[in-house]
Every structure is written in C-alpha cells, then in structure tokens.
Image (tube, rainbow, N blue to C red; front, side):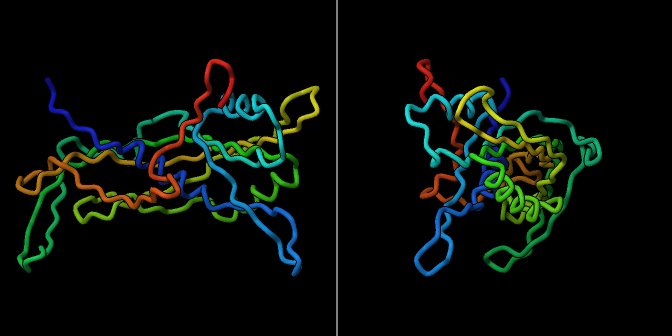
Amino acid sequence: MYPYKYNRQFERYLSQFKRVLSGFQVQDGVLRDGSYNTRRVKVVYGSMSRVVASIFNKTTFTNHTLPLIGMHLTSIEKDTQNKRNYHHVDHVAYTDQYGERQAYSRLTGPAFNLMVDVDIYASSHDEMFEIMEQILLIFNPRVTIQVDNHLLNSDYLTEIILESISNDVNYPTGTERQVVQQSLTFRLPIRLSYPMDMDANVIQTIISNIVVDSEDGVDVIDELVITDDGEA
C-alpha cells in the first residue's frame, strides 16, 4: 500500500477563492440620513443547475433570496508552463527559534490550473451590473492571494485570473420569477506540496497554516445540498 498523504490542498485553495468572493455588497434601502444600507452577497459552492433549482424550489420566493454568487470547480488541467522535473529539489536556509542556521531541501510538487466558474444570480439587470462592476474592478484581470504562511512552502502565493465573461441569461422562460444570471470563468494556478518532515533532509510532511474564520464558516466549503424532495 502507498503511504497515506492527504492535506486537503484542493479544498484550501477553493476555500481561499470563496473568501475573496465573500466581500461584495449590494444596496438594500436608504437610511434616514440619506446613506445607503448594504448587505453582503452570499456565496455558495454548487453547479448552476443545483443553484437555480434551489432558488426556485423555495416555498417562498422573496427578493432576499437574491442576489447570490455560486462557484464550482469545472476542471483540473495540467499547468505545462510551470512544469518542473519530478526530481527537482529546492533548497532553503533559515534561522530557527534558537538562532541556529538550518538548511532543508524540498521536493517540487506537480502544477495544475483549477478552472472555476462563478455565476452571479440577481433579481434584475441593475443588481447584476452592481455586482459585476465591483468584481471587474477587483479582478483586473487578476488578484494575488496568500494560501500559506509557512517558510518552507515555496508556493505560498498564487493568483486568481479572470479568463472570460459570458452573456447574461434569464431564468426561467415563461414565468413571473425573474433571475438574471451572468457567468465568469477564472483560472487558479496551484502547485501541490509534498508532505514535509522537519527531521528529514527531504520534505515529507507539509505544515500548512491557512488563516480560517470559523465564525463566518469560510474555512469549509459550503456545498449546496439538494434533497430528493427538491428542498435545499
């Protein structure tokens, strides 16, 4: 049997992407002093069909169901531009907590591109444009994120790159419930890290300290679960 090595690396990358998308807001009324009241746009993980089914399977459809941002992984592609030899080893030297100089070697993991579709669901074109404008000003055309803060991880930074934008779609046809949907495709270059053992010359057990926020639930991907009776 192969040694068991699993560190939830795909989930961590997608969770960080979800965190980036979780800061957008829309106007929600006007306060007495004339300023705008805003509310955060909810972000869920799920394919377009599941999100749309969830929206219209609600027993009560209200404006507060929308807007909504759905994201899901569509493919994992080999990153040939950043491919390195399987036997390539990086070397790093640093000073430990006791003031002593240490040197370690680390194997270079395989590189991939995560292709992620982000769908915006809004109750009107105005609301959709409100969210789109905020997203396009941030992703111009990329955002750099930190996925690790450990010294021995050479790929602690990566980018989220906006690749394409599709035309808007109205759901569903022939009903009174209007949902305007816009899709964006992003590319997230990643490199899987081999486990790292501090007592070995070559890294064997990875130490990954990704910032989590358990109160907001952004450290775990929130899957949209649709039951057999159609409820979300």
